[in-house]
Image (cartoon, helix red, strand yellow):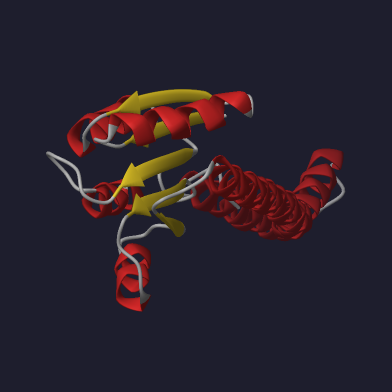
Length: 208
């Protein structure tokens, strides 16, 4: 997994980076909020770990920006801070973060949060796959319904058109019956043409 890390404390940054890499992940580390935000814009990460107070942009502002990014809605955001208490937690969550760690932190703390993030990302991926399959199923069901509707809309006038055409071609009809048959052919051809026009007027042919 590709992770982004931002902490202006070199020792803390090194500790977190070491734990993440030891768990098999690729880490891009930065010393300030502006740099990590620029990095996210270049290559969105599945997980972002942020110090709260940093030069440039603080961790909460980075959280807000990531959450507003098209590819940041499912990213796992973890804030590391020396602050504690309910108000601090509320501020972190209000900014869009998933969780926070109060310093001092241990490698075990970081590894535990990493496992939570991995599980959360797996669930998010499963949800996206399920939604995609549901959209596909609805699309295919729509195609089936459209096919039945088209059969009804076209088969009936087409049958009348072909029947009258065959009768006229056979020469078995009186002049009056032939005139009436030609009128029927014209009416049914117009019905079919109207169906075709409605199909052409569909705004988004990818949906049904």
